[in-house]
Image (tube, rainbow, N blue to C red; front, side, top):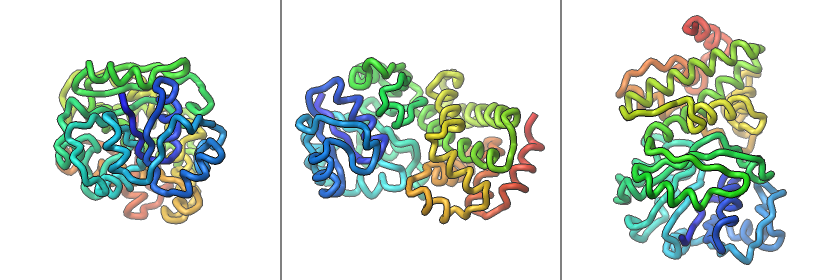
Length: 327
């Protein structure tokens, strides 16, 4: 496979590291030429995971997204969700015959649509050529080569199996799934629950309550997944439950950090400015809240986060009200 990476953040960098353990070379789209120049000079991403070194002779870098895509047959999309649409808008060539794996843990903001649905609807890419990467896998731990487990989802399970060869190595194990919709929504929602967990930490709710919070979060994911795609699934698998747990509990979780700051009294804007990183759950909260207007699923945690993040409700008061809805 001729593989392209779109994106230059920590997750894109981690995925590039994995893929380069299985292929001779990759094509890599990075928006800024100065980032590429520094990357080549120092053999590492100057902005993310700076301890992860690369053999840059195996990487063809370009600031031209159309060139990178044209040279590749499999595209790994690893751009933060707020910037995905702007990035894709730069594509001027036919990509309907390409195979695309989304590693985006979010949705298209404002349009409130899943990434795979957007690619299918706007670029004519058949569902069997679209896949997603899910599971509990922090980029930082990939860079440190700590044992990790990923789930690759595709409606064509044979295609998912083929893709698994790109991502399997001595420190990454792969499982396969045909539940693209469920995994993709779960990947969005887990960030919302990590924000909630961070808030509760700052508000001095203990481990006992955090366990109840995440138990109820899994019930929300199960209800929403069934409402949006009624196919068999086991949400106790690592692609669902494992991803929720690591995002809610890990110190690597930027969504948890964002929630902690909101719980401490930061405004959304102040928290975003100080973090200097994208907390996908902020955008995911609005997207899921708006999509749920169609389905009407009982999502009290999502609703609470929406009220706090978008209607400026008090975290202390809103979380206290939320506790009354748990058992």
